[in-house]
Length: 475
Ligand SMILES: Cc1cc2nc3c(=O)[nH]c(=O)nc-3n(C[C@H](O)[C@H](O)[C@H](O)COP(=O)(O)OP(=O)(O)OC[C@H]3O[C@@H](n4cnc5c(N)ncnc54)[C@H](O)[C@@H]3O)c2cc1C
Image 1 (cartoon, protein in one colour):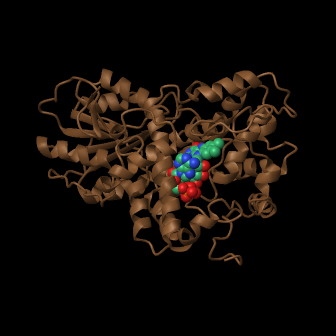
Image 2: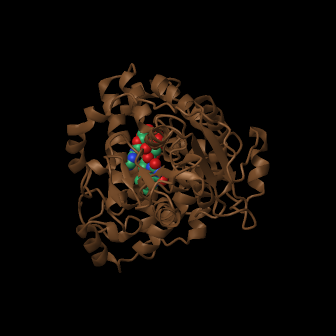
């Protein structure tokens, strides 16, 4: 792999195909038609070669945790991209691979008529192995472009220890990157390339039927609250900036309120860029401390997670923890656990702890779990599992299965934070050792936990978000 610019790396040494029909952008994670450095790079390459651009997005049935919930959210963002790319003079093909009888190897087939391939440089889940495989199989150059965050991941040369080590580095360079995005324009416009690949064309009211025919986990239902796509992401961003951001520093940890952005699923699927959210925040009419608190999460915390998964190949295991955390686990491995719950009991939200069960309920029913309760949720699974490894496996599985924002650098950094990642040693405790300790009793006192529990119980009958700070009588 050769790093060509701060955002672009070349993944193989193949020659550009002469006489090709198009440049191919294989869109995997940045599912948007603007604010996308990979798309911009693909347009620039197409312009250099005097070719049109073909954007390809595929959805396979067999990626880990594929379900009705994740499929529906992705499909909800397809038709708006078709329209947006058509308007820009770019061809867009979406292929839903339903089961093992459906056509395979579509990217390889599309590559046969492509001058080169551009794709997304996402540092975790299935994307690094996709990129490795296509770089090997394709007979043309493959470029991976980083459009994950505001600052290119390559600006940081190694894994950062914690927020306090990356924060000053971010502050030093932020002004250079925290600027409006300049969209490239394709010169050879052709929105009607008819490539050698099936195109799944559907209307919004066909999504449920399409998903029912896919060989995915049908037990995880689509979210009744969060709907996919860039338009929906922008509606949520506007509501956040207008009604919630002015109170964010006071309400972000209030699980019983709609007091944070709830943008993480949109950011995860790339429906919206963190730059767009950050610029809207900068311009907003809100107190500086609210803006700072939000940008700390959106930039410092989020980019720390991307830095972690980019530089630590063991990001999906306890082996990526700092020495002190691994040592404390060795010392406490035999401590007696007061409660032990199986995966089935946890998944069903059947523990003695009502607050924990409520968090699990929120996740299962809505596809999200509030940030503050998520920390407690993770900590309690450590307390209630026979081993630390089992606790990690359960957390990874439940988070990635049910959460729309799962399978993300933030998922791994968040889960491992419960085990001490990006944190510091605290006082010695049974089972937790020096890992920070949280209990439902003390955590539940810091927000309206009774109201939160009540809200999660109403979700099945009456799905919806809690009240925003503006609607709430407390403000
Ligand atoms: C056990 C556990 C599991 C987690 N799993 C995920 C996950 O699967 N996906 C995910 O995106 N986040 C995860 N997080 C981090 C955090 O809980 C979510 O990002 C947050 O709940 C998203 O809600 P929001 O969009 O309203 O956040 P806001 O408070 O509005 O923050 C804005 C954005 O900043 C980023 N952000 C916020 N908090 C964090 C954080 N602690 N670390 C890194 N980035 C952050 C997110 O992109 C978020 O959308 C996890 C945390 C824990 C403790």
